[in-house]
Image 1 (cartoon, rainbow, N blue to C red):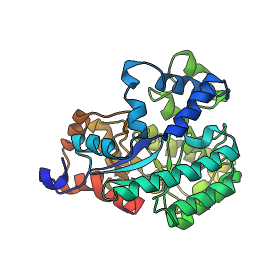
Image 2: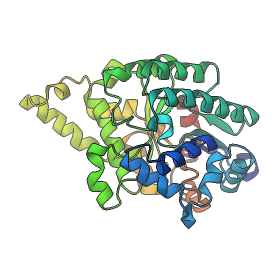
Image 3: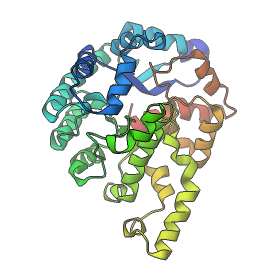
Length: 347
């Protein structure tokens, strides 16, 4: 139901909504069947998603549909606009040349779909950090030529984190273009995934938040946001747990400065909580739970929390009602659903 037909005074913009071109799913299937990667997280995750389990039978269809079928699902849940991005791990699982080429073609495909439904879809550019200079150029092309609203980076790329200076071209491009990077989870790299795999904890169940929060914290304590102070890196799934830790992280940052431990942390220009509040907007993707959302709004700021459904992984009318029923003002509800996303993604 649209805002106009429901009497709502706000649009519902869902900010972390996934798609996957049929070609990418074919290549994923090939990697699995031919053992073309030794990434244990990828193999576990995508053998499951492309398998025969009942819960995943509709996923391939919903992944590839960036047209009428997706719009019907949006209408069924009252979503006015989706910000669509390539599902994890996107093109980052491939070698640099393949990933770079696929990012270009997938961005063209996404932009064409958006052009057919500009009032319902916006999108984020896929990039291949395996080739940082080419990734920065593709981000620029996606924003300036295709009208995309930022970049999706599915966390680590072949085990490497964005705090590595080799990726600064990408971060600099995002800052100059004044567009956000959405840091979406991926399964943890091989050096940390072992204990998760042993107990089935590696994916969205728990491991995603661990993996991505570590990535964000590495960026903070490495001084990335001192070097790029205007950079915005969006974190989904309740900020991957970071809002909960603000007080404790500030406490230990002070302790380390007093005790002269970890010089790189002592050299930061701001409190860790300030970086999270000022450089890391957060979304509710996959976390349709009022206590969590309202806690984020309290500690991170009402202007820094956005709505997301996490479609098609989560697609439930009841979850929209949960967020609709939050005991906050209509003005704050409009920020959550609409105007924060419009400002941050420049819609």
